Length: 200
Ligand code: FE
Image (tube, rainbow, N blue to C red):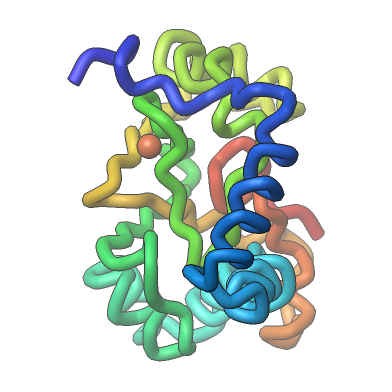
């Protein structure tokens, strides 16, 4: 499908109003239960989000056997921690090393691993990020404050509805003796998209 016919960005400014009007109409006709809609919204606002992904990363940093399972079958490894479901069925974890920095984009629209990262930030859905991430990834990373030395490879992974990616950032220096919970605090959302790094 050509990009032009599949552009999900820049929703109209009255989108929220339209959604509200639709919800009201459907509720009045008895087609939807507003409590059910609230439950879905609550799930994505409070239960699903980057904290889930951070817990996965911290466990991978502290448990080599879990890390192997995560790199081998990320969907199954994340499900061990209770993170699974819609938009996370086929998940692949890509590991940053001293030789490789990974970054994730969806050039077509906004595919993103919801169970571990929640909903995507607006910049992830922007046309600028989607196009420039593949054309000039190092320049984009610099704008995010991430300087990748020229001798380090940058790999850009294009998400699809079938396969979504999560970056396993490098363990920051100076974290010897940190608990898993303390390590999870160092894992930002952007470090798991690859537009940031984990920092102590
Ligand atoms: Fe997409």
